[in-house]
Image (cartoon, rainbow, N blue to C red; front, side):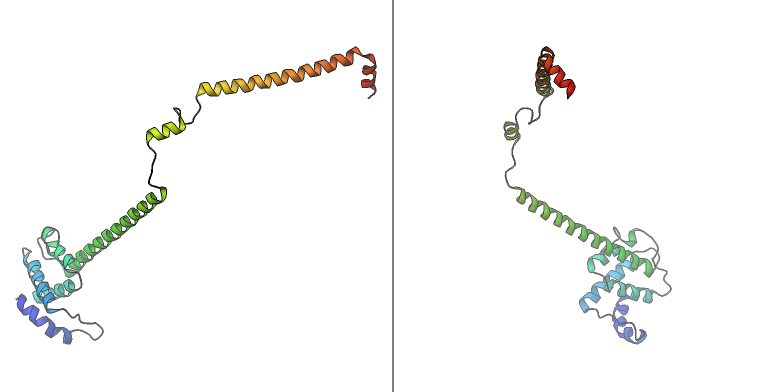
Length: 198
């Protein structure tokens, strides 16, 4: 039955098609492989109750001719494709949908692989830009000290205490100077009258 389809399909393809639809040209070696795949696919189901087995097979040949062999093999394989998912013969629409889904999966995997390669190349480029030598723990500790360049609470408290004592000493000096000036003005009565007149 399938040998007859493979031989008869190219002969009947031109007259049956409307003029607006282009007929595919399939290489003879690919036609043989596709016919084998259709035979495997058709025979994988419990009951092949297509209304017209020749039309269904011709539709499968046309579908399988438009997809890469690895996609067709995936859909025909009982472990990964339609024969492993149903015991009844699917429609041509379901076959096309399975082929499209596998095609989209492969395209998505290829896009992700390309993105991954870009990211790895970018990471390698950045690593080269940053320089080859990265300091070790011991080198960093020697450079920054035991506290990694941060002051401890005790050191900060000592620093604050020293600043506070300096401010207090400065304020005391100003207070002494004002008191001395006040004392001078109060001891000399002429200075007092001059300050009141002003």
